[in-house]
Image 1 (cartoon, rainbow, N blue to C red):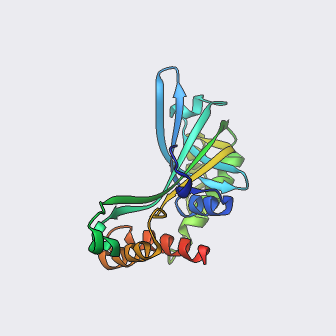
Image 2: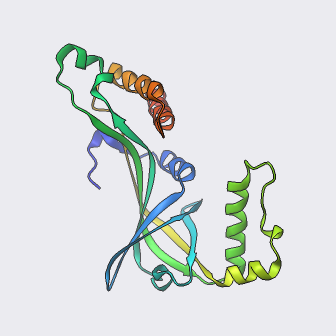
Length: 207
């Protein structure tokens, strides 16, 4: 991934936090028929990523393959009108801010009902936590759960290399970044609050 030095995020804890906050990844693998991409949620467990796919998915037949997982954080269009320097020089143009994490590793396919059940319990407990009446696996009939488990396989990727690119106007002066944060908060479009919060957090980490 092309990453200018000022956009590189190397703090592992920050990269892990983005994965936890945005667990829906794009997994890319190379096959005899060419590149394939799948989209699925992952659970970060130490230095491992756990997920699952339908048994018929091509990933189920790629045990041992090298894979790339892409986790996309907040992103958004940035207007040059938000830069104080634009009012002074007019030498500014639009851009797009974003945060992304790339994980490289080798795929392990797991065909184990017990492992899969534990993964699904973890995933549902995490994502149902905010519901008034959280759904749990035991809410469904056992024969239905067993049938569902038979229809999927588990995926495990050991993180061999992780890289982050947080393009958040680091190439601009602090007052321009403050203008972008204010502009995002005022626009308040889809994802703007999350992007503004991430930029504000980055500013705090520099203080």
